Image 1: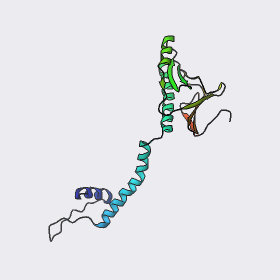
Image 2: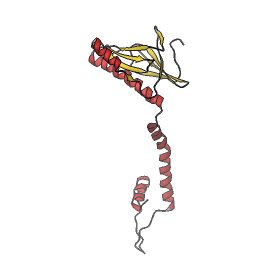
Image 3: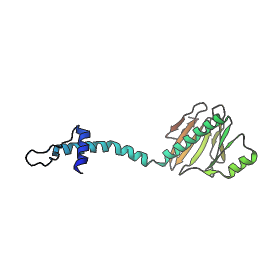
Image 4: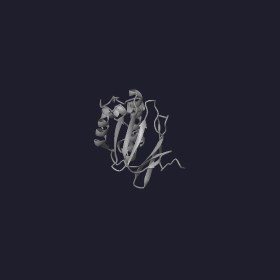
Length: 189
């Protein structure tokens, strides 16, 4: 580290920078060992607190990505239904793990085309089943989630499966927030 960098660091942490010259030889004095230790210790302390936070933003596990995708998709469809004043439906094929969106203003041909051009669910996202309070669980075939132009949606639980672990998302009819449970939640219990 050159003298200029050390001066900047010590000015930042200590409030001053030593650049005095000796009256006898005309050369600049360096930093004392104590000052160097203090600056390096402060940098180390800052790294201890910032590296874990930085690590969590770069290496996000797949379940968090899946959670963000589901929450983002639900919010986007709720907002689109209100903004366009039309009912939207998110169709999820649990057998092929694909989805597509339709709205009530689409013609029958456009809806059929949307189903044929269904997109795959992102990444390792695997939806185990979708549970409605009255209709019960749907674990195969197609599940439809309605988003109404008045701002509400169907009440349901979406269960994601990652090996033996489950994550559940509760979608409430009148709330914009989606509640995440780190277990297999059910309307029965």
